[in-house]
Length: 544
Image (cartoon, rainbow, N blue to C red; front, top):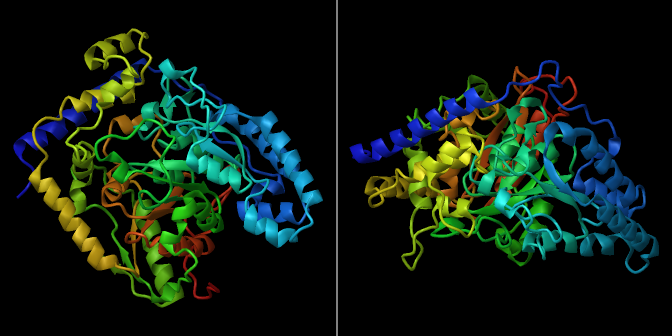
């Protein structure tokens, strides 16, 4: 049994629409300016090369002041944001005032000393950035819609509250795609966000502003959300770590656009950072009272885990072939695991992955338990008014009169291809894949899989291959925890990476693997420096 002719026509229609729109966009877009910078300047301030864990400890021990750290990050943002367009609204003055309060608190602290502060306020004085789609009190909260350009959050989202209660200081909010439903952070309200490793490349989406800012060394850590790869793709493209956890562990409340249908079952909020040691404490803080469900304090012995590697989706018609450099990087991970840990990594083929995109697309359109279908994307674009009509909006766009992006128009057009009942074949493929992965992974299995089939694309090129995000999206439908890990740089100086996947609620396995991969492959690379490309070569003298 395979996809019916009608289902194939639906996919072909969506692909054709995106290809035509991309062609129009390319013809009508301005060309890059000759002689412009190609990447951000290197990070040179030592304070910017510390993890959140290290910064918090130094602040508590009075080795550095919170004001100094916050000012260092403000300086870096002011240096690189004109190139990246990652932070769209700052709160620098308020952040400096809050940092000064932290420094006074530490000077006055007598009861319990450093250990008490670490327990009560583990991120005291540490600055961070936030995806604009999350509510941060006093900051814009627009989801990238020009019609919501004057909306300001009156209260914090729960995840922001948890981070503030831990002592962290928000510096501002970062860019997103229109309505957070595209793999590039671009909208008509804030513009286009760029990649710190190559300014002509995408920073990804929907948490692309976070990925760009953190990867560019201009934020200690950030917060993203992921319904189809929106943490993992930006982390991959910008060379940083990120974690998409299990649904409902970290609160998704207080973010836009609102979920409908069954979509919240596939949405996860999680941390994005340059240093793997920050992932677990950040996840624990962000999860709040739900953190105990993950047993994060249980030790993990990597030598006792079962590892699997899937190098590609089997040749899906919906996705590009996987870049050879990504295949090689993942192969080197396998070789390193086997050499260092004495494990045997089994290479697998999972044929259901060929249908990753249509499975995700089907489940995103399913009704909720009361039979109510999800809100149409065209309605969300209308922001409380009448739904936009894609052909009319496209005509306006060609005349420069539309307030929507070409990617959003493509999403609205693609909705027109949805008709009929959900495919039983696709429902069966999802169930078969879920059973297989549960049997494989259990409580001690880890799966390696590419985060995307290509290196970071040039701006807007995703419009031509719109379904490549299937490499991440399929796992949202399955509800599995995944840590995205950097693996050095390609020959072009672009980040390489891998998804590290476990079964439900086994996040500690992927987080422990991320710590290992950081030591083995070097982790985040300073984007402005001349770094050696590729993962480090295998040697026989590893001390890991």
